[in-house]
Image (cartoon, rainbow, N blue to C red; front, side, top):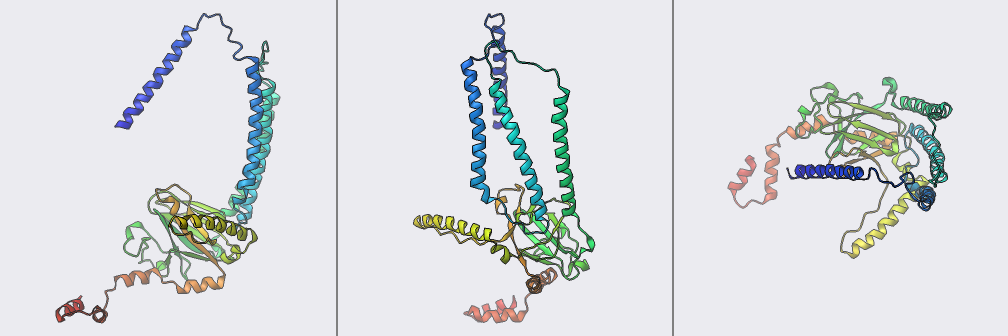
Length: 385
């Protein structure tokens, strides 16, 4: 209520100030001052030179930004379609820089050249068909080409062939963590519904579905190199966005529906760690961490751990207070290592069954000895439990 009253007071104050300015303007009617010259020649000259100064600032800051923050951008893509995404992005950047360079120079040059001078009258064009056609057709052609190429790239990236024998994996989003469900030998995910969420069945998998019997639920996802991965994405609560930057993959996770994305990893985690640019990047990060660790230790705090590169699944939607911490590690294995990892996992159906099976009485009795009970009555009581 207090906030509403403050807003109302501010609105009324703004209206009052606006009315006062109108009253002031009315009081100036009939004065003999010449308002055609809004500023002196000296002021206009200063404004003109400031325009050139601001133009120089724009380009100096642009060059500084590219030099300072350029190495922080993503480098080599880790998916088969990543090169196409990067190519489309690079073309867009080149067009933006060309247009920006031309238009900004012209804007500030004309602002300087045609700055106000005493007795100068502005030249007025009602219209110019040639100029209008020029600045309408050229942007339309350039943008049409860019959009058509973008649609072509998008179609290639998003096309999922059901006969492609891709591994089907579900990414399940909830505030504020990710869970993955890997399809088993049948390569088909079982049905799921939030109404079935209970105990270890945190994804609400319908365990009566035959296809769900071999599904594997994990908190750290492994995928094989050189194999297309077909991701199906769900959200339990709010809108999330599954973002895997090094794979150039991003797709919204929408409550109540399933969204999809597919890509093929081309570098294992170990191979990507050995890329020269990544080795240098990790070394720089650890150098910064080492300096900060010295300061932390001096203040009696714990030193930072050394950084090691890993692929990550992030949330690219501001989904709540702990949005920044919503991430899951993705490890790209060789096909052989992936098969070994897959065999080591326990299917969800077995986990649910184990959680529902009561502990045998014999196990309870064996645990009694370790308790070293002091009397027979307490031993019998524990054994019965």
